[in-house]
Length: 400
Image (cartoon, rainbow, N blue to C red; front, side, top):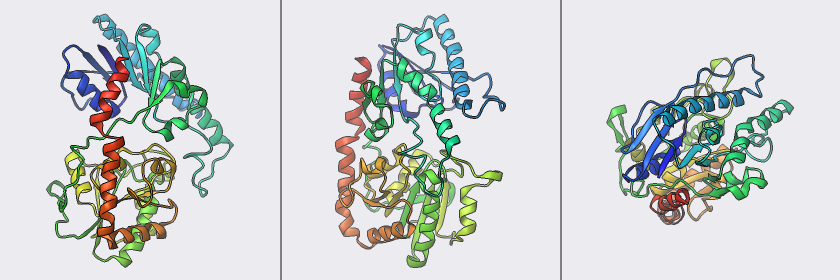
């Protein structure tokens, strides 16, 4: 099979698929991307670059569409180069939304187009209007509607689509559900597995918590309201008064990955720490970590906190469950699809730091009781999200 993967990042959701397909010499695997870093054995990575970004004078509703078109144009030029080298894919598989798949059917009309549909934007009923302190207005409603334009083109153009969770598929218009299969990327449960008694020592960043008995962990791409960062800092402020021996490890970059940036170049980390001065000797900001160090954080975790708006479910929550973490998660739809309160994790209200702190303290006070929940957490991933089971099914879906 000849397959062309398309994603601005590399390898993103296609990491395991591309690697597995690349192992078979009968396959020709090409990956079109913006990202220069990284390689996969058996996969030919080819780079494309937009000629420009959306112009400032473009109406702000339309800028995401203009950027998507420019992305699609760049892929179109790349595809023409591949055709000139006699590469014509049987399958094009790309991530919908940013635009790389927009013109795939035009330049490769005989190829089957598969799209990874991660999210469809709705003004009401999910992430946008979730926070009552951050209401949306008519301008937001219009902007959100137009933001779906490139995704709707992909929904029309694709032969089949895939969405990783039921919750995420539910965001798409019902008339397109017949095109979208629910199938998660899968968690490498052989990599993300428990190690009882693991200690957290990361020499690269001079972090040694080997003598610490209580470690609360938090992982996110950014430090932002979408993943409950303000609630995290408020929770830590409460807990530091009640648990003098407890340490907090925060993995993530000081940026906004989803949602709105603060005005005047401010960031949520500095703003929250100004409002809630913490004992930073017991709060450790690690930035983003390589996979091996990130795994050590999960293995040593006493309690892992995962907060999210009703939005895309993070891989990190599933990886934490697979590692046998005691996950305290927000009682929001994407989390509740996986975690049943008191069975394989604990659920808590997203907006109430006092309740979050109480739930974490409950878990810390009852380690024996939590052992069964930790075991069931890993069993959930083995039963429903194990890469060893899901990857062959994913490959078969492509081959069909």
